[in-house]
Image 1 (cartoon, rainbow, N blue to C red):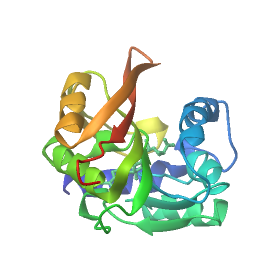
Image 2: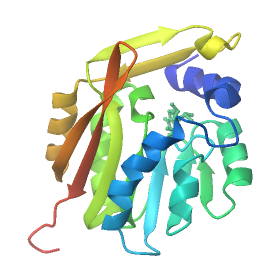
Image 3: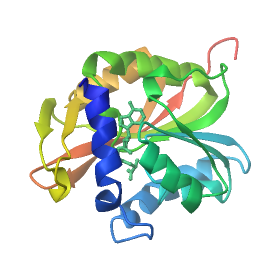
Image 4: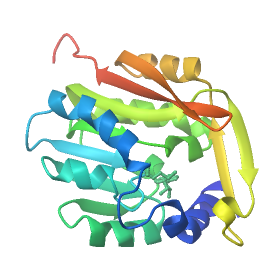
Length: 210
Ligand SMILES: C[S@@+](CC[C@H](N)C(=O)[O-])C[C@H]1O[C@@H](n2cnc3c(N)ncnc32)[C@H](O)[C@@H]1O
């Protein structure tokens, strides 16, 4: 089984163990992050969420004010998202295979999902995000803090669920974003256990002709 098949099968298996249908304590951090993004966006604009999971809490919150497209590799996650967030549009897809028109979205968000992609596919995804965003469009993502590639079996205590992660360090992500035409407004360490991730708010640069 290739890496993407493992991730897809893994999230199909752990979907409910990862997140219930209702918001829990873990949702608060997402709302705090979105509290910083939402005021930057105009009502009704198009937002893309990559690796949206079951749509709770991010797609649901954003779909109150914006036109949200959520994408996830796992059919189980998307089946739940369609039920839990009827106001958004969802696709089962590998985010690295997506094609959208240039400047189609005004914001792209992705939390704890890019870290599951094979490392060598990640720089091209940032270039695509730069193309999909309108000039001046916003990007809010969580990525790795320390470079690491690894596998865990029986993840979240679910029998037969294997999960794989693959991420670069924060400085590499900053470089990839800058090379893809983004200005980084801020980065923030988000602790988790012995390690953590990095939350980034970036903006697609306005070219001379934009
Ligand atoms: C840790 S979960 C995060 C879900 C949600 N963003 C959240 O923070 O609650 C990672 C999600 O990314 C999805 N994912 C992983 N690789 C993906 C890919 N190549 N394309 C689309 N989605 C992917 C998984 O199926 C899973 O639902």
